[in-house]
Length: 264
Image (cartoon, rainbow, N blue to C red; front, side, top):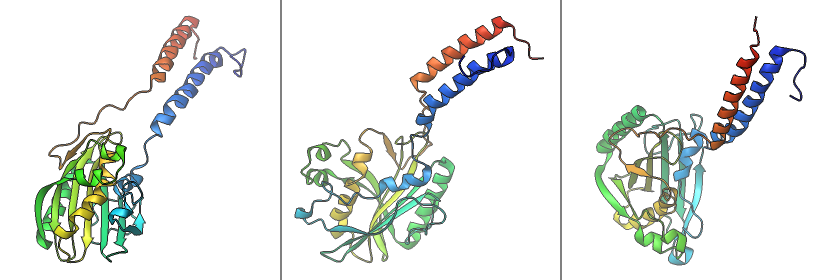
């Protein structure tokens, strides 16, 4: 083999294996590196404040005042609720036309036990500071109002949510598991209005914020709202090229045994 030392039977046997290792890393490396790191994943649930999702002629007036898409322990926790995960993101939003302020806060988990405990702690916190109820949000009107064929045709038109009302903020929590990334993925995401404003008059704007991100994210994925049990994580997909490498390795191993190369 080109590049391998000659005249040494041991090196002659090892060089093909090194070559196979290089091929393996070349094939598998991109697959492993494909998913974003955990600290970037909570930002996927922050609203997309751009057309066609946000339609200015219809009165949408959102602008992002402050945001952090990649949460970590060094980033301040969102303002209204306890910090539930080191993987967090937030966006403060204002409406220039009305002066209303909105907020989105997103927490991401990969461990079921941690997610379940933080969810229980959150529910206790919400019960102490406000009122809580379960609702189903219908996003059909918001999707259709974009006047965009693709967006209006997204399959997810409704989502279960936890409705929360308090003097500081009122809004909706989306709590779900999803196979959007490899492995187990759990989210707790809040879309709310800031201050003691009545939730009913802001529901349309909050549903618009949810519409800009959730249906599109779930178009080719599955999700379960407020899951009662851990995700059954599918096995990590193995690129087809690995089977070729495995076959080549088997051939090399047989050839190696036939050589009867001594290692002592």
